[in-house]
Length: 106
Image (cartoon, rainbow, N blue to C red; front, side, top):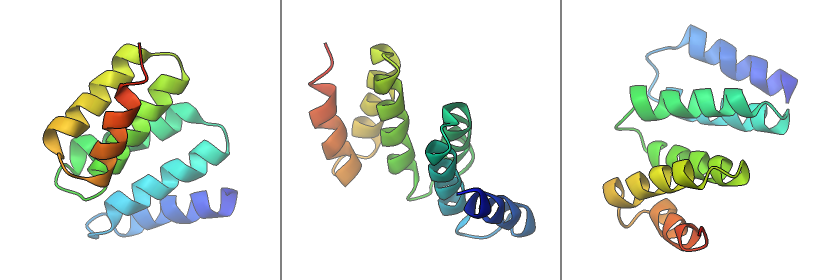
């Protein structure tokens, strides 16, 4: 994952205006997750949500952030991400997954 991480980081630097930058950030987050660096995963997913608002990667980023929060025991924040996903991306596969996950949180 270290090599992939470096490649995605370099791609982001070399091609900042590319239409696939949101995907590069998402996969960068996947690499960080495999390395156990949850804080960096959160950081790059937030970049997708904040900077690339119209990207197809936003629903996936919201779902993954909710999942990370739930794993950390932060039910409130998990629900916050999933509620936004359900509200803003109704009908997406990620919104359907979020709907089922949100029911499991007390």
